[in-house]
Length: 389
Image 1 (tube, rainbow, N blue to C red):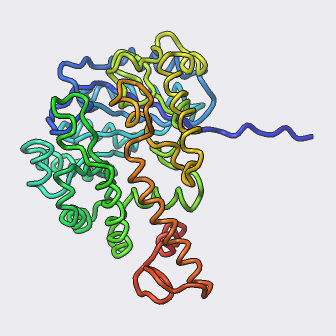
Image 2: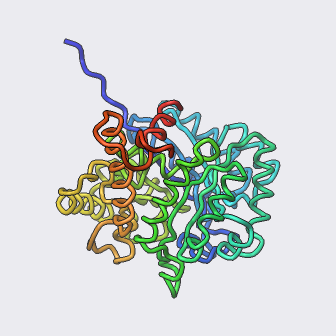
Image 3: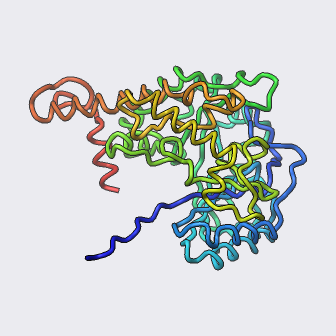
């Protein structure tokens, strides 16, 4: 009898070289003045921790703060070390940066290892700089041009706030006209601010924004990609989550802070109560799960299983982001991700439209966008585009 091969379960380790950042974005919740910087010796400790941690493919994402503060020498040493010493884990890499500190030297190092880059841009210059600080746009776009010159792939995340959502059409047009992929985040209440809700986008408004972007995307599929809509549609089409907000990230996502502390996710870095261990101690998966932070994460998962069991989207939503749910309540599990309202809104919209279009294609119904009686592109068109890719 043939022995069944163990199915590989990819995991994600986010490396946070520092929480420091030269920008002063109005709604930021993750930067920290005076944050230490990770040494290359700590990267070596990460290697030793992961060497026998598990036998699955790993993706390393360098995040922050601003990870380019670590400098060219750091990446010149860290990237080949991780790639060489953890070759059995088939490591992939990514980096999230505002691009201000990208130099030709750093660009060459990143290009040598073909590191995809994520950056942040909130739309046209005036709006972007109002939210992210004066001069942000020019510095980021200068870095973007340098990155492109070195063959680096860059995609931008756009944060929608309670203010910028008023200009959703201008923002959409900006990304479309500049040939940029649109990936968006809703602004969260900043735990580091005296006015945590000032910029936060209410869940109801976020849900309506997503439906608006769905319509705009369907009208412009040949001119732009809206990554979030692809992700939501893929959840509905496949019945499973495919991005971190909509999967059981526990046990498959970790973050390592500048001092080697291990956290459930980069969003918790710098919060002592969420330290699960330290790479120097080589904790096992079981050790991390047994830590107070690990137990709290498992309790959130159990809460979702009980309280969301009647939701038709449970399989691929999983209660949304644990950080969004428990960090603002000092770790007390009082509910799921507050953006549940928005997720339901867009999931329902996609699934309802898809069902109507399916019925129309069989001659049972012929109303609504994308139906046989409409010239507007519908969800079926999006599905065909995704399959075609």
